[in-house]
Amino acid sequence: MGPFLSGIQVIGGPLPIVFEVIAAIAAAWLAVRILPRGRRAQWGLIVVLSLVAGASVGVLACWVIGDLANAFGVTLSVGSRAWVALAFAGIALALANLPGSRARRRIGAVASAVVFILVGAIGVNASFGQYPTLASIVGSSSFADLPAPVLAAQRAAAGASLSSAAPALWQTWHAPARLPARGLVGAVTIPGTISRFPARQALVYLPPAALVANPPALPVLIMLAGQPGSPEHVFIAGHLDRVIDSLAALDGGLAPIVVVPDQLGNPSVNPMCVDSALGNSATYLTVDVPAWIHANLDVLPDAAAWGIGGFSQGGTCAIQLGAGHPELFGSIIDVAGELEPKNGTPAQTIARGFAGDAAAYDAAKPLSIIGAHAPYTNTLGVFAAGQQDDKFTAWTATIAAAARTAGMRTTVLSSPGTAHDWYTVRYAFEQGLPLLYAQMGLARPRS
Image: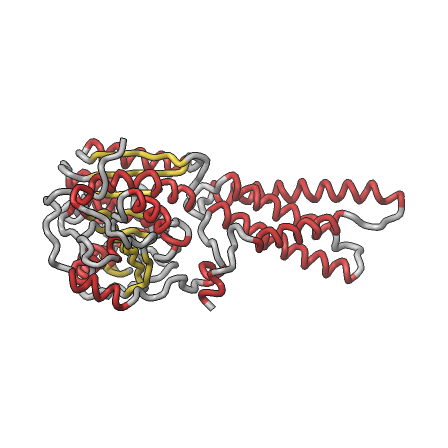
């Protein structure tokens, strides 16, 4: 079922249009009733008031739940609020059709309300960009295992890499005539050998240069999705493979090998990229994952050739681990990360993730980590947030300023017209990855 569901687009494609047309027809049917002349004006007023009241309730719900209660941890975009308002307006119109109606109309009104809810959900999802296909909604993987011969070829060359102090790859690499046009994404298992962390399957992207005979040792980029989420969201929602394929086409197929491990274990739980009762996520990501990469992939060994990045909770992890381990990572890309790891309120976070130790919690905050490891001598930091994402824009600026003061070379990106969503991530990839390429020696620095 995975390939079939992967072919059904929820963002773009005909399915959303079909539901929108059905919703429009349902709304028109609900708004028009055959009534005596004296009641038509009264019914018209009821229709207008229902639509206005429903939309107002939707906007109010977004404000109370999203802004005041901060139930989602992010500021809802204008597009998301509009879709919620439209869905509530439709539901209110359906409710207005229930009193005094025949059974057939009441059944139609209930069915219409369900359609309005679905259309609203589809619209909100499109605004966030998280689930582009039915497969991504139901959790069915869109990626097969990395082909055994490909992984075997990588494994055979692993560990023989020269130091990245050698000439930059863009200076020495000559692309062969039969260079693949695109890279390859496949699933792998990265065991928690030391950490015992119960990670789900990881994904690996091998760029075109890694798929030829006698490939060069390449840099590596560890990327992390947000929470809730899974590794495949980096590709199906973030389109990272498409972005890197387009960049590789400019650089003779050169690109980093991308490894997307699971830093959650369970999509409903946030281990906060620390070692705790919730799981030894930090050890998994800084010990087990690098060890697996060195043993199974042909990568350059030096920190300058390694990067770590992520979105939202993954962005918080990226700055925690990247800033905390400059001996491992020379580049960091933090897309809309937070000022501190979170698992509920601060008190709940301290209890769940730090065994009640408030000092340990403070030490795990990105600003504390940056201060503890300053000065940085060869670390690049790319920080990004959506232009409409006021809260995360402010946090991003704060962390970037601290990183710059601590010696990192920093770039701050603002994604035009987007919020805390995967459109921001795509913009960050498109604009930020070329900066990492220069750091990693993959491409001549671009002006």
